[in-house]
Image (tube, rainbow, N blue to C red; front, side, top):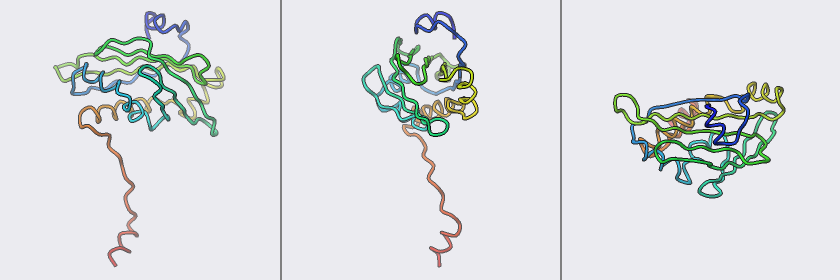
Amino acid sequence: MQDSYLDATGVKGSDEPVIRRWITIGRPAAELHRLWRQPDTLPLVMGHFADIEVLSDTESRWRVEGPLGKKFDWQVRIVDEAEGQFILWRSLKGADMPNEGRLSFAPAPGNKGTELTLEVRFDPPGGALGEKLTSMFDLVPKETLGKALRRFKSLAETGEIPQLAPLPAAGDRKEKEA
């Protein structure tokens, strides 16, 4: 992330790992920004990763279960935003897993909607060992952010997030047919 971003969010170092994912969504940037900021959206799109409690228009509490059942808890505050352009946030003091992030909205090539870029920087607990454990156990894998963006895309374009129900076992069908 750029120095101006770090200055804007109050983070002075850049040694923490940055995870970056992007997706194209066939909707205008301002519409996507408004949808992202609706109170029920974040728990829907990130619910596969964390339990999120929306505390106010700009703050939320996140809870994640990590390696060996360890629970991580932090509060996040939106520190800056411009409709249809970006949202910046950072965790508050005392976070179990300090982090900051940026969601950027940009016109997609060929007038095909909006490119959303999600960048998150985590400062894993426990220094280098914590970073190694975080990557080993995929506490915040790149795929987690990718999945969140795909869920958001589905919500924005179809109005819902697909839910996969378990399929009945073949034996169950045969018993019902008999």
